[in-house]
Image 1 (cartoon, rainbow, N blue to C red):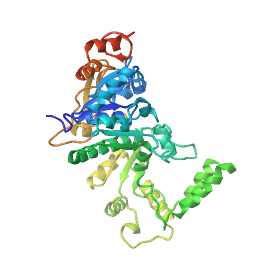
Image 2 (image 1 turned 90 degrees about the horizontal axis):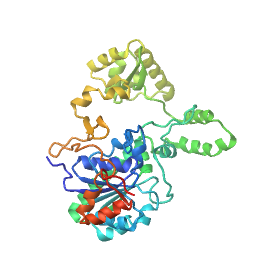
Image 3 (image 1 turned 180 degrees about the vertical axis):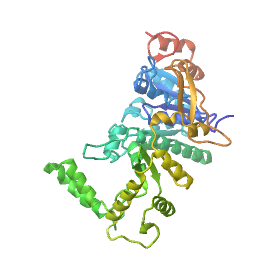
Image 4 (image 1 turned 90 degrees about the vertical axis):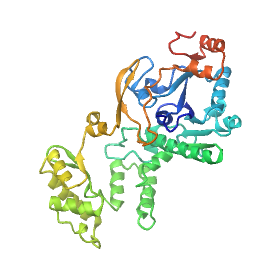
Length: 421
């Protein structure tokens, strides 16, 4: 069955994660996604475990189902052919370095002249205004406060969640722009930045209520002077925790058990009440809606300590069975390696098997949304570098002799046709 984006053409100038993963979502939806790579390929082809000369783990997990052309964009003739390609595209995805698109004639203003209906989605690090610095996930984790300061130093999140959030925002933005174009016939440019994505994933915390959050100003004023005075990181963290008005919720978090850890997610009042009763905790806060402790922090820490003490008496598996029998949200803390064999993931088709001609068999994450009428599908593995260069240029009407000449001069890569000079 054709996917929801069958007939849509996407030209992707994507490197690393955000733009490529966004492109993969459209490929899973049936779009013809043409990935434009430099002669040496997307840098991700060399990131992570190297599996062949041009294939690496970090390329395989965000480029499946696409067609690859490998070219020298610095060459005027090649660039002219690429501009012909974008003139026939519905969507252009980019994460060029600052100023690069303009120099290559591949920015929205220039492409929209020949293709006014184009949806041009640009992924930047810090947005279009102000700083034009390049940036990657770890830099934005640090800049936007995602990396948590601890006495042992800042702790970053190991997975590049900002990159993937930006990819999802970009995909949503493109779908919205396509809907708008369907009604009006008008294309547009989208800007999705890693900085904005970093704020989105902190939506629970990046807010300020004037009546209760005055401590933030006090802390920021303190920070301006703290490090210049030579205050230690531990002292800064202590000051921050002293000013913050709340502590970790008593029935929400990862708690040690007799033989491991149990994740408990009782956030609502009804769930809190059931957990308190199950664990034998006398907590007035779950029975009296008008209860207001004189010291919120001390009260919360006291209840949480009782939760920790109660859960330490049994093992994780036993607690999981008890909580599930009561309909309470709780579960074991698993290692990532266990997820690949998880029955729940396979029963819901959240993982899929693929075979790559060079790499062999692999298990990968399936398309992330299930559509009843127009299902997404994994149409194939990632393309080898330049696998579709000849096909794409032939579709543009380029003469085979001209393609051969570009290949022989080393301006393009055509997989499987030997080495260019």
